Length: 304
Ligand SMILES: Nc1ncnc2c1ncn2[C@@H]1O[C@H](COP(=O)(O)OP(=O)(O)O)[C@@H](O)[C@H]1O
Ligand SMILES: [Mg+2]
Image 1 (cartoon, rainbow, N blue to C red):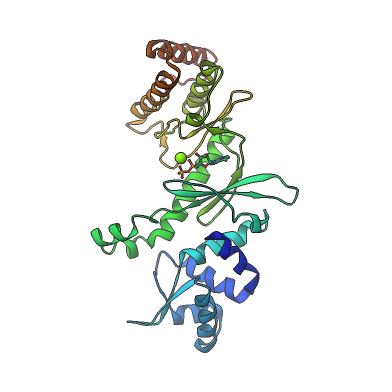
Image 2 (cartoon, protein in one colour):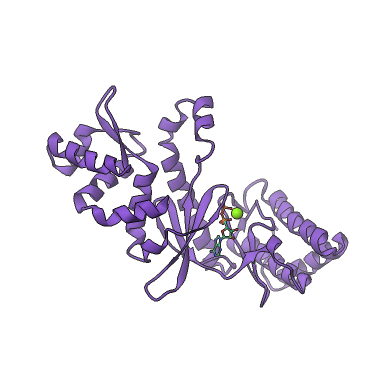
C-alpha cells in the first residue's frame, strides 16, 4: 500500500535515497545491481553498503540477492518511495495515500497541494496481476526488458508526453503537471465517467465529445484508439468533457489511424444509441455536421 511507503519517507537519509536512485538508474542493465557497482558509485566500502542495504530491505524497498553474486534489486515499494519523494516537493504526499480508483493498468490517487488544490496521481501498475503468468510463458523477458518497473516507468513517460502534446493543442485533457518515475501528477477534473451519469441533454454532450476527438486528430495529430464511455469524463452541470487514459494512442500517420478514429467514434455513438435511444443515423448525422464545421474552420489538413 502506498500509505505504508509514505510513512517510510521521513525515515530515510540522503545515503538511502542515493542507494535507491542508483538501482533505479541501472534498471536497464541489471535486475540486481552487484554490490561492487553500488559501492563504487556511493564511494563507500562494502561493509557500509551492506548496512544501508539491510536498512532498506527491512522496509521492503530493495531485495537482497546472495545466490550467484551479491547484489540488490529495487522493489515496487522502492520505486514508489523514489517517486513519492520527487512528488513530495509538489504536493502533500501524506494525503496521496488515499486511493480513488483501481484501473486495469493503474491506481488513481487524489492528493492536495499546500493550499488545498486537488490533484490526481496516476501510478502505473502493469504486471500487477499477470506477472507470474508472463514470467512463466516468457522466461527471460522480465530481466531482459528491465522488468515491470521499467515498463511502468516507460508507460508513465509515454502518457505524460502525450498529455502534454494534447494539452498544448488545446484538447480537453487533464493538465499534466509532473512525471516521477512510474507516476504522473495531473490536474483533478470535476467529471464523472460518461457511463455513470444520467445526462439531461445527451446530444450536447455528444457534440462536445466529437469536437474533442476531432481536435485531437486534426490539431494534435493523435488518435486515442481506446475510447469508450469509461475514458470520457463529464461535468453534468456544464457539459464539459475530458478525454482521459491515453497510453495506447496512435499518431495520425500510423497506417491504422483512420480505422481507430472510426472505432473510437463508433464506440461513443453506440453508447449514446444504447443508453439514450438516439438513432444511430441521427448520431452519425450530427458527427458529419460537426466534422464539416470543423473542416470549414480550417481545422483539417488536406490529406485527412
Ligand atoms: N485527472 C482526473 N481527474 C478526475 N478523475 C480522474 C482523473 N484521471 C483519472 N480519473 C478517474 O480514475 C479512473 C481511472 O483512470 P484512467 O486514467 O482511465 O486509468 P486506467 O488505465 O486504470 O483505466 C477514471 O475513469 C476516472 O474516474
Ligand atoms: Mg480507463
